[in-house]
Image (tube, rainbow, N blue to C red; front, side, top):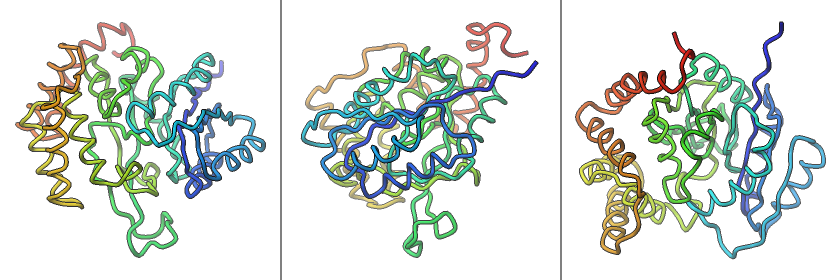
Length: 322
């Protein structure tokens, strides 16, 4: 008896991506295992993006495009999640085994999704996974995979927000996405709280190009760093962890200014009493993981959390692991 093929769908919120859209579209349609469905939500683009999307949708039957009204500006965080859910409303009834949220400023290696499917098949506890983001270095004028690549240095304990690959079962168990800044970290913490694993993996078949610098899509990198600090407050992060995270970021551009921007975002959110996630269990888990991170390092905290989560996962999914 032939084993049922595992299926996956993609949902892509997009706005004003004429510069990058064709690179992303071409790298997905040429995957060794293409998606069963790709829902692209055009969130009010004012450039040539709608025409590019229409061109590809006419050529590839698995691409469906949704046009939203122009809200007047790009909205990251909650705005991205809002647009994502409009696409998910179309994709959800098909009940694919896996779901991807994919940005439209990426170039993926040809075996990207095939490799993610292999990783998911090998570990039933793996709930969300991604590859690693690199951006073209100064000498890589063709923005190719063969040229100079610079890592974005995102930790192994989260899947990356620009190309998240979720097991549908886990996505449902965590209640989907929270419509706020750092939604793409919250899902991983929620997953680990329930005993699932969450990670990103650096290997040749999973190294993708981020054609726009991370955090620069809305008013530049400094604004992105302030937004990161705001998200840490709203998520409920421990103050010691926020400070350590800001200091760590001094190793990367824009160095000191970027670190101070993160701390200002966190402090301003607290001073103005911005709302925080109203889930005591989640916040307790988050802070426990963060303090473990500070004591044991990223990999020690990750190993400890995954080991402790195995019993919870087995209890909720009897018979799935030996």
